[in-house]
Image 1 (cartoon, each protein chain N blue to C red):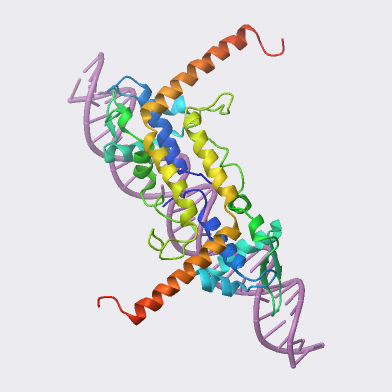
Image 2 (image 1 turned 60 degrees about the vertical axis):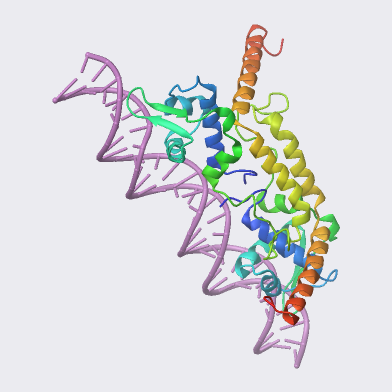
Length: 158
Length: 158
DNA sequence: GTCAATTAGGATAAGAAGATCTGAAACTCT
DNA sequence: AGAGTTTCAGATCTTCTTATCCTAATTGAC
């Protein structure tokens, strides 16, 4: 199965970063806590976060009280930035169906139809931030928690 | 580098099919002609087209006068159909950032923001057909041909 | 029937992405 | 200082995608 907007690795990163954005500002969170909460492969996520530390998006500390935290405000970190840190840049610019010289000047046949969609995608990636995701996630979680409580007090099928 | 919307293989398929859509209806086109025109890896494209024959999108004939042709009207074949034939279905339905139970009923945190974009993507893939691509490609090609003529009669830098 | 041309299909290799493992470095606590 | 815990960094393994090669099957022309 193919991913639409970003790679698998990038999706892992987004989920981990969203979890970090839910934590109190500046507080360190251990890798194992993140992977437990989000059900992610621990060793692999460690590698991903390491890379994000190097790009400056994350801070990390070693030792018993160590862990990871966001280096900047969640509202300042967009999906686009995450995607470019993980997947690299360039694939948003690329046209499918390459008539080799492809630009606004000499566009490929997909260009005209594709351009508005590409703009929409870019806007979405730019406007969606970790702050928004974290807020949305928290909201859904209390919603689900409420439902769970309801279903235990009155089990399904009654 | 990661592809947006579809895989590399799928992009090859789209380019080959667009070329076929440019040919006179029902006329057979050899694999080598397609790969030469679109600069695609011959052996690999052979495999892709073989699969498309099996799904019924293409017809093929062996022997000296053999080749491939579209089995249906170019206007009836959408990018979405091609994508599903090559990449399989399911990735358009999938949410990133999986809070496991993700549906309209219990959406994941990305769901609200992502849904309109996903709809736009689906619409684009459904509404873009081989007929449109072929028409666009032909148009661009005469445009480029005109330009090439112009630049030979009056070389750049004069 | 023979020959040449073409697609079909399997086997397999090369490369990238995904995932794991291991030892080292750093920090805290005793 | 020493033990234990945690991240860091690099090496390694696996899996999937992309790509190639070679043989078989089919067809048309002579």
